Length: 206
Image 1 (tube, rainbow, N blue to C red):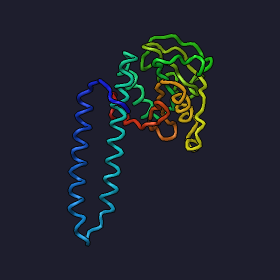
Image 2 (image 1 turned 90 degrees about the vertical axis):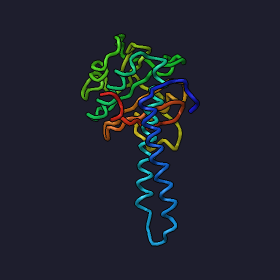
Image 3 (image 1 turned 180 degrees about the horizontal axis):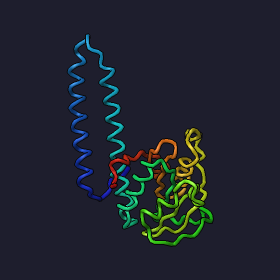
Image 4 (image 1 turned 45 degrees about the vertical axis):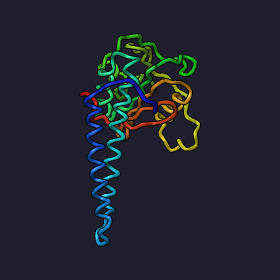
């Protein structure tokens, strides 16, 4: 990802602290490695878990950077993602950026309402008539819902679920940012420019 001119100081500081701890742990491991009687496999596993946490936290930071210039409703959107994740309510949310998406997302169900977290969460409530498709957000407006997106054609992505392949498919064809919440695990992620990044949902506003 390229450098972005955005500043979310608390989150950035948290990432720096995590990296400092990781650097210290790696330095300690290098010293311990000289002791041939010590098995370090458990410590390597712990390092891997810490790196995954840092990656997810960094994704939350970049999500803010990418969204803040295209919607004033970032905090409410982030709160919705956290709530959907905690409740394991599957969701597929498109945030339009520069590229026009109408030719790619087909005809959805018109909503044309100012974004609120309660409205977005109600759309994805299990059993809602609109919960299976994707929601399109343009600026601060929920434009429409129940969109069917083009799936990623990459063979490496075939093992992913339909929502994730749809998120990747649209992000491969446009500069849109597409957020996914898995109904099986509650895990959140976002697709951008053909790549899928995990989200640290518990680090988002509640």
